[in-house]
Amino acid sequence: MTPGRSAVAGVMALRIAYGAALIAAPERLARRWLGPDAGRPPAQVPLRALGMREALLHAGGLTAALRGTDVRPWLAASIAGDLTDIAATVAARAGLPRGAAPATAAVAGASALVSALVAAVERR
Image (cartoon, rainbow, N blue to C red; front, side):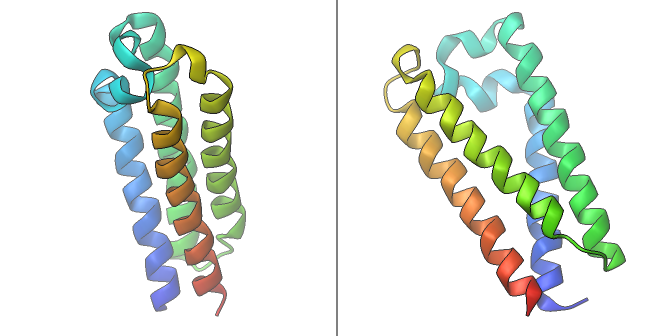
């Protein structure tokens, strides 16, 4: 496996772990993002669904990386998800805890950047 392909696999594995953690402990992972409502069952439903989508999307990307097939669609979908998280958070910022929107922009933006970087490295 090339170093670029190994980097893609590592990113995908970390994102699978994040998805699994979001499923298992949505309140713990989302409290700073959503505030105390993250502990309420109505908020935990979409948080767990988000976690499952995160895990499945990145499992597909990890499988592609390990098989040597094209990972770019998986990375593009990952980046699109991160950018959607930013847009949705900014749109709802008035009802979120102070600092949630900039923190989400920083974390999700960094995640999108890492995915873009590994896509660029993997192409070489």
